[in-house]
Length: 292
Image (cartoon, rainbow, N blue to C red):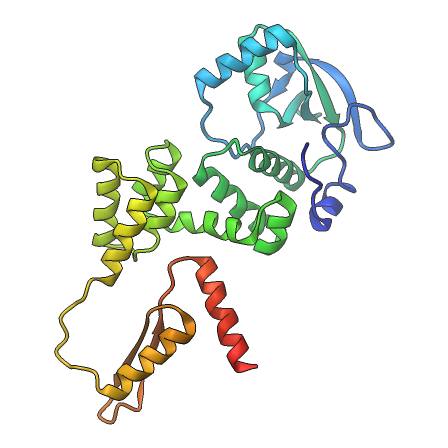
């Protein structure tokens, strides 16, 4: 059963009407049988690929058991068609199964933003999307509805960290995103690749995943090893700087670097390393506790 949406989207969607209801209880919906040739796909469908084998299996199930959950549509008077809001897989499978008509929940009032929200949230909560489609869905919702990652996580039944980690996948190079789309690498592999800055090392690790079929844990260890590789340094740090770095590393529980500049060394840059958003949150909490 789908979880309820948060206040922001509830208000946007006319009081949070439940698209699974089959009875009109004063809302802007009604139940109706609609011919398949009167139904068109959703313009805002976040899913870009439909697995044919999966559709064939669903079609066979529909032949045996019928459509157990209606498709959600909205009527377009200009086209005299019903546009799908939720349930395009069921619609496609029904066509394969040679259905002539299907049960639909018909919305009489939905604007483009509402249709986009319903389609995205339905797919995200059902986990029907590949990692990049999910990330793009999150990004679209944040941009269209001006909501925070925390709010979006509440709407979709996900943690803030899960939303953040998903969005970070969009920082990967196009070929890595393509590999996530087609299942060549997993979301865990993608997060491990993000441990490295973009460039030759990330590219090399990606190629190793593909050619050697290494696990997520192996990828994480390889990324960590690449991060810890030492580069030759012409100037040695003095004992005071080394002691400062060591003390701060013990407090924060992560690698810390202090790079000084100028003749006197009174200016510089403090670098605090982290390998995940969860670790960054922990570092921030430790810093707050020391400052307050």
